[in-house]
Length: 91
Image (tube, rainbow, N blue to C red):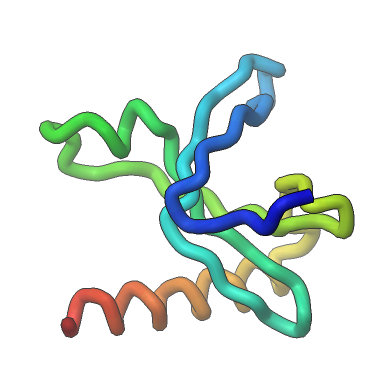
C-alpha cells in the first residue's frame, strides 16, 4: 500500500456505517506507528466553516485507517498533534 500523505482523501465508514470522505490534515509517527489527523472533506472545503471537527486515526499494518484503541494512546497522539499545530501557528 502507498504511504499516506497530507492531502490524501479517503472514504471511511462512520458509526452508522455511512461512507464519509475525509482529508488527511497532518501526520505524525510515534513509536513506529503512523497517526493521521483527518477532517470531513466537506468541512475542509467549506470556506465559511468557522470550526471543523478533527479526528485522529492510526495507520494499521496494512496501511488502512483504524480507530485508536485506548484513551492513553489517544492522549499521546493528541499531544503530538497539538505540538505540530502550535509550530504551524507560530510560523
